[in-house]
Length: 495
Ligand SMILES: [Zn+2]
Image (cartoon, rainbow, N blue to C red; front, side, top):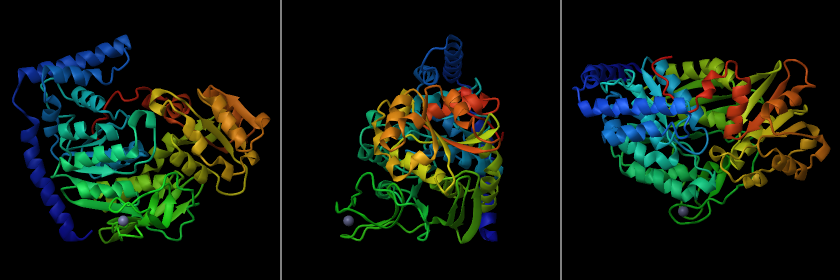
């Protein structure tokens, strides 16, 4: 970054700081205090009584007592809100983004424990305020992961400064309906907030199409690496031009429907990239890329495999730059993310390393397989399939994953989770002899059995749906405490 950019950024920072203190001391308002006390009491009560729905109730109660409370609280966050949405990678990207901004000295609050629905977010904001309704932990900025369907309500509450949209894929159809509905919902949100900067994944035609709804500045990011061996996977759904309806063509497809696309009929094409990942390198344990943007380029090394993690890091870096972070903070955090990220995604299972990969839909599962099955040596793989509400009750998507493209019989495989038998059946159809599949519903027992014959320090992989992943983390992630209170709290300050 050049010197004038930097001094401009610092000047803006000084101006903001001057306004901050005034905003953090709103005058006493009895109904606001009553609402916050009601919300906090509800939170404590639901926790003590272990009532289901405890994460959404406090926000609902507080809002009934004093409508508009969440908006008032949000206004105290001086540098505003950044909201992150998309089907895959929201949680990881939100964590990375908050980390980058914190490294730059910004006090950030975030819902990085995964509660991303409207009422859950309201509840988190209420519980992080003091009873006078002051200062959300003294935050300068808030970074929120937001479920696509909750975008209009959350945006109306917090009036975001920046919105990041990452990807839209078929996922949990029983909860959300078609992708087009999701795109329309997010598009409506952009329409309603003209002051907001929108950061879009240019490689996903659905996401790139949102630009027409944006009434503020639009920033595009994408992968630019025509030489990358991205293991072409078949398109799971044909993609059509938003302007003329013609089927889109790809100069290069990276994964799912993400790539350098264009319309053969009307000439619509992937927008020019403001931030690009080039020279991508992928191994079973790690990934790396060069981040280009703002006339600079910096090499980013990630301790996790898979191209979708490159997309996550690129999304976080782009949104962080738009929110005002320095390139130094971006590079520093994503590189240093090593430890924190590694701890979270690589677990110790009886002295062996187990890399955990979220695989909750065909695109994510396909990418996880491609990431893991690099090289010739036999692998140890667990497929953990749950069908709880948060996973989507319909598990038929496993039949859309092209397990057949790999010779899985060469590897040691386990099928686990609440639908272990369905997973085993799928693997059997993919050519793994039934007797060779370790079937065990209990995820921790399955992982222990999977690694039993491996040498100490060996590497296994677990591909898991959402709640199966939480269960595995709870069983093996050190103290486990980070993951037991799913969606309960906002993490405060610079911790
Ligand atoms: Zn067209």
